[in-house]
Length: 197
Image (tube, rainbow, N blue to C red; front, side, top):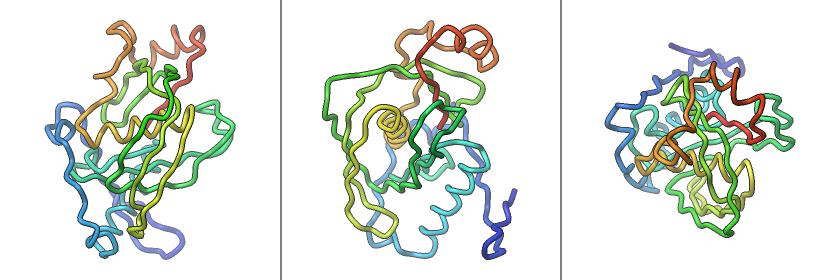
């Protein structure tokens, strides 16, 4: 499948998102050689991931989800996104070889979804204040501090780089539901927010 980029009129591949059960999703992804970051192939991979994430209407995507077992993940979501009931958006961030640091003990629960685990939602509790040190798409060292929803989204994506899915971190086995049943029975009475990667 291809998405046509309206700016430069070049076809941009939409990559297949692999699903739970595929062995790549359970591998620890390999570190990226910084020397390869500025290559055409690596930059094209990032572009493919962005287009794939947009096509799937996700807010994050990790390279293992498209069967590329490397330490690369992206996130991006709009400000005032009605779907996620948040006030602040996040412009595109490309995480290469990220290292996460927990900065606070406070945690919160969100109902998470995943493009690699379609049709389900699960409640996960995560730390709400983190810092991530990483390389950006130009190979420059960066650091981002995140709280709340953004901290949760980042942790969800970076889990993929260690072979972990959100279902591994459910607060309880009972906190897993199909999307339709979640919308019908849970979302109306549970104040915890929902995210999809």
